[in-house]
Image (cartoon, rainbow, N blue to C red; front, side, top):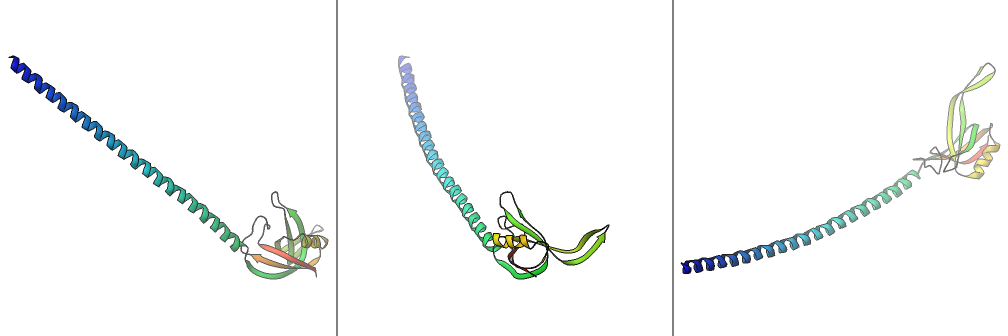
Length: 172
């Protein structure tokens, strides 16, 4: 019986050693897998980070180029000409960007109601960028004038409220 017990103990020790060996192999495999996954995650993080960085820079550069393109387009002359009429109003406006704005009556129908004249007609609004032109207009308010202007594709806040920029004024 003792040989049976010794045989059982030997088998038990052999199974224990096999179990410990297998357990150690599995733990080593798990450690290798964890290391491999960590390396893969780190590599993926770098790749995603580089992609996001490139994407942000691309959007910023495209935005800058689009802004420059818009400013070039908005600053192009659509037409150049002159208009004549009675200078009704000229004023300095704006909170952040101070601009000179004005109106010219291009003609129309004047009606009198209870002693008050009402001009029903065509009023043209314009902007002035040059202070000397503004000062000349300020002296000619209420008189007939000829205005030379440039029409831009778009108005910009620092240029005025309208896309019509008066460059010169003459008394008519």
